[in-house]
Figure 1 (cartoon, protein in one colour):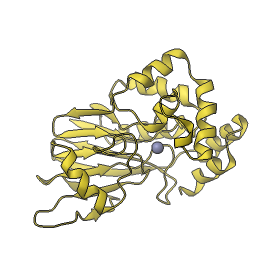
Figure 2 (tube, protein in one colour):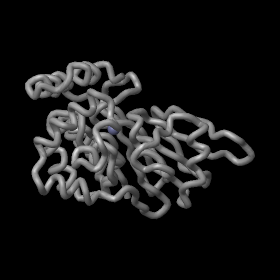
Figure 3 (cartoon, helix red, strand yellow):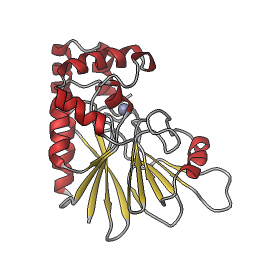
Figure 4 (tube, helix red, strand yellow):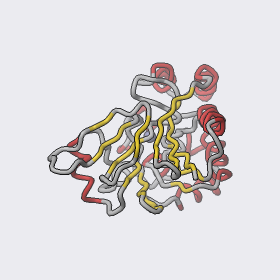
Length: 243
Ligand code: ZN
């Protein structure tokens, strides 16, 4: 069975469609796991919710998903994110809001725990260093934990006899071992690791291999839609730099 693991779509339907198409090219996908932030920043939040619903996978809530329904106050977001969220709220139907509100903060599937931020703080914490990765190993009982939120692909593996977990910047793939591992597939809709291409992971249960992929999409068309929507210029520009 092959799982498609995605995070941080952020209202970028064009990037999501490119990921789905590219993933299908690698072989049939059995189920999709989505690590939250379907909306926020991007120009097609309702369309992204509709597509994620249709994909019928497992999806957890991100901070922007909760912000878009008023469950997280705007002062918790930077000014550009807050502006985009106010705009997003206006575009969502009552059914969309209900869907976002019902997304769980965490999900467990076999050996995997799924959260948006971190197991210690599912909606807010960024796992960006070996220090906070190390601390978070104590907050999940499964072997593996999938996170998003930072918009940068990363792997943290808990090696025996070591105080800190080594970080492997994943641009290819690796074999899942028995060691506890935290994996971030990177962002579909707003990468921030300096590579503007949409990021995703495929996990194959046959060989326990987890592989990272990047795929180009039509950034310009998304920028045009954002400009038409009056979304902040800074958010429009960062799509082409991936920073
Ligand atoms: Zn995000």
